[in-house]
Length: 143
Image (cartoon, rainbow, N blue to C red):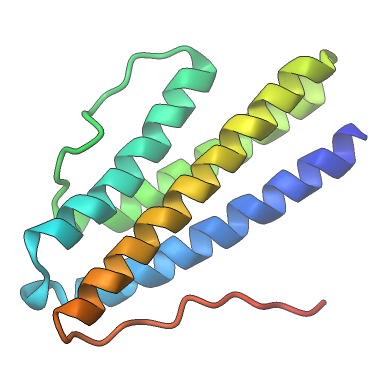
């Protein structure tokens, strides 16, 4: 069961990363047209993701949830968050024998994915309301 749950979480992690990465690439290209709300929201996605890692690993959070990050940091910090999430999943699912702890990590990460989806949707809505183009973030993959 551990490997099944691990693979599901890794799949969700990758899809969440790819959607946010696609959005960041789009926003970087449109940076001069972005309002403060969008910059703050994409920064919040990144900061919140980092905060979740800190919570799981019982570390101090390095930034506030609503700190606005420079555009030049977005992609690098997103990549760091992605790799950290994968590492958390691998580490806990290899070494952890307590099913309750694994389910807790599963619940925390699923809440993270829902949080990110919510804020990506808010960003897209804001782009549309401001008559800007919106990227297609669909990730329908048939294997």
